[in-house]
Length: 209
Image (tube, rainbow, N blue to C red; front, side, top):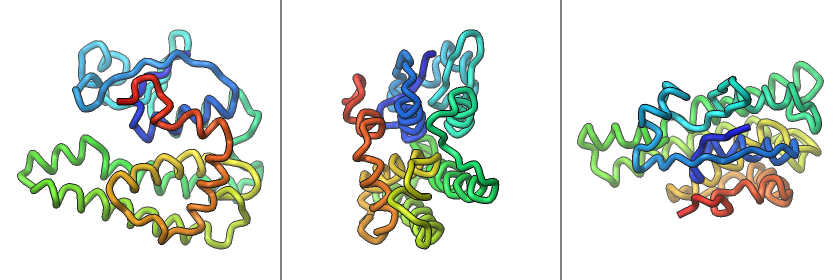
């Protein structure tokens, strides 16, 4: 397998964690997002959205981190990243998608670049990203406030934790006071104690700047 990513991409970070948890190796192919390498014709032929990650497996190409993670979970079911119970599974997906669909995309590099193009001052751009993170994380804190720990949904990491840990890293980069989310921080601490999460961190990647 080949994973196209970027060390600071939270979506690629999610997939790195999943690969590590499953004990799967992949060739990591970095694309520097700030230099626009994701928009080259050669990469657009792989992922026409011009986003990372993309996972190549033989002749197949998969895009979108959540879809990639669920595929990995289906073909390598141990350890499972989604609960067996259908209601619990839906709750884990809802939490994960609150981050992957409603929080992360509206504060990512592409959106922030567009805000700058529209003439928004840099201070306002950074304020926007911080606000988006606070809104999303506040909702996620409430979603799992009554869930057993130490992870988001119980005693093992799930898709929810794979989305949470990279998003908290994003929030800190934008100056968000994450101490307002004690339940999320407890889940993050449990996750980051595992080698699969620690080794997937941006600063551990070969292309880290």
